[in-house]
Length: 235
Image 1: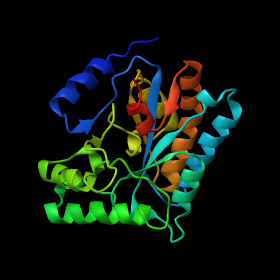
Image 2: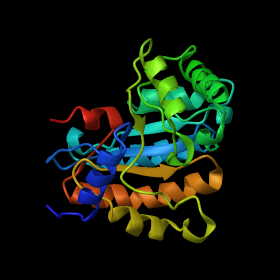
Image 3: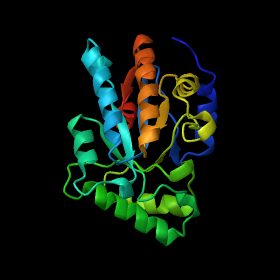
Image 4: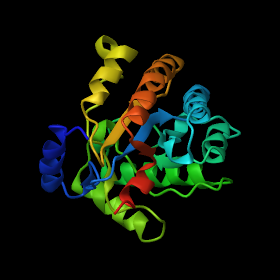
């Protein structure tokens, strides 16, 4: 198994920020795939790409699962994205109402958005939300207090869901799918948390092209590709 220099770096960062999850310590060849900013109609393209990969593999263990962090202002009225994600046995995560830097909000405004997004994700659906990922990967102590308060009544983890990498696929100069595959591959190690983006037809199409190569490469290296919750349950 290849050893990644990003693994000790992730460990160092995790020690400095214990209120966030950057990776899951494990020796098993397993990584979590997370997709941010989803909820619009283009989300289906990403679901289809993962589904096509899963139809090609030979064992259940090789099938990829992901955690989709939904931005609820992108949701259509019928919430088709949530239903389709759950139908394909992926996980739903809370990414707020709007695609913005939540750490810049006033404490009351952030708590209101956190609760509103949770309600929109769970109302009339069977979604069990366990994770909140803050916009731009930034959080502050008052945001943590809101998350801890929500965790007392719901199933939320008491850590913010971050990642083992800084994503570059939302920038014009680095949104090329081939670059994304090469870049993301540098952050693959046992217990890593990878992140790609949807949120628009352009981004979702780029993510689809990247996933076609990335999922194949990970499978060939004998990695299991799982949801965030399944990753943290590894022993």
